Length: 574
Image 1 (cartoon, rainbow, N blue to C red):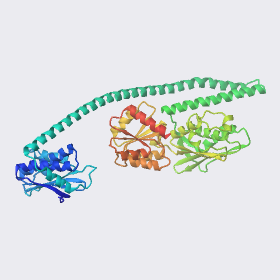
Image 2 (cartoon, helix red, strand yellow; image 1 turned 90 degrees about the vertical axis):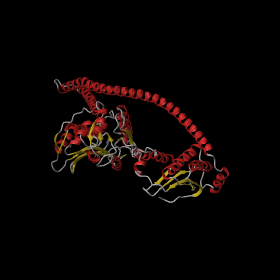
Image 3 (tube, rainbow, N blue to C red; image 1 turned 90 degrees about the horizontal axis):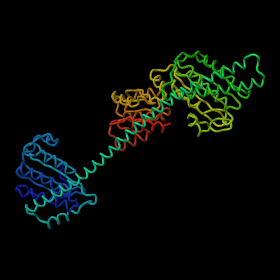
Image 4 (tube, helix red, strand yellow; image 1 turned 180 degrees about the vertical axis):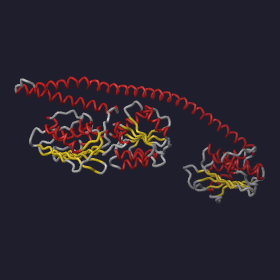
């Protein structure tokens, strides 16, 4: 045990019973002279009294030394008794003594800031305890403390016992006051909990109503699309009959019927886009996988899009890949994506060319649609994929559109397990790139089928099930994964709408997964919700929030809480 630290201000011999009372009195007097408040004086005096009593009772005597250091009051109690057998059990609170020895030492350790004991069996006991000085006292005047003790002298045992009773009554009063405060706080917490329960119930009810409204919207769009498609198809068919029938229409009549057919076709395309977006949001858009040859795909596109060129100022060129390349995807949806990009490129290119190409890159295919058109300003690029957003400009004013095309195209690319990027310079042109895997793997198929998929990454199967149960029958579809490595591998192939991530996992913990995601430009913007049962301190919370994650405690997570946090995370990341 280390040597005493500090200047000695008092020493008490414990040979006689009075020594125990004197040790308590001197400890309290020194504490008072050092500026401790009444409660701390009582704690120090009680701890020293207990140690002195143990030395006198079990060792037949001993010595108490009270010292002052720069920032502590220290007390050392020594004796030459038999030591303390089972000391480790005593300090752990696991030893039961008929004399109460164990409980006393445990109590002393709780009362003081520092506690050291050395009690080898048969060689005596030494105990050192310390209490930090009040913040206003630094480097106490030892001479003044000694002088103060000398003036006070020794009190009679009766006076000390009376003072101890006063301290006990004061302590009892403080305990009762705290009990009253605790009862008031408990009542307040009960009222608060009642309000929170009511709020959760209201949120759950609202979530149910929102889900119902979303389902009604999807059914409405599906029903309305059918109701609108039928007459629009009839209008187009009748226009075709008029234009190809006998006798032939006069020139002006043919022009008018041609306008009718074109407007009906535009409206039919708009209805189809709205229906596809509704299906993607609801996770109900089916994927029809088949083998597609790139050269045949580009031939089909060239035949469909040649009529778009209404002027010789713009050329539409197709760069066919050299070797025969086949990929497995949904041909109809891929054509829908590329047709949208090409038609936009032609629309916003007054003169020059639109180049469409495809090339093999390892296990992926890159489609490129590049134009020499008006370009897109850097400030407008993040907005072009939002629904119903159209970048203002002269060509936009003269053209037609709803702002749904690029949003739908990006969602369809995600369904196909790929990604879409864009680069543009005002006055120079725009390049769209669509990268798809040659063959959609299992995890890509799951994520792609959802459109708005949420990866649930947790090594605990029960925790994954709880999250999946909460998100069941909502717009969110879940993809469960059991580890951080699997999550990074999945996101390297196809990005989810959001990630619900546990922190404690055996292969790669959640914090490291989050760090790697934020360091990867492609994954950096994926919304992340940390779902953990770990108690986080302020530093850990700030670190996670600094990496753009929202934190949700696993314990007691409700459906409404999860939906709310997930919604906030995805809105912030979009």
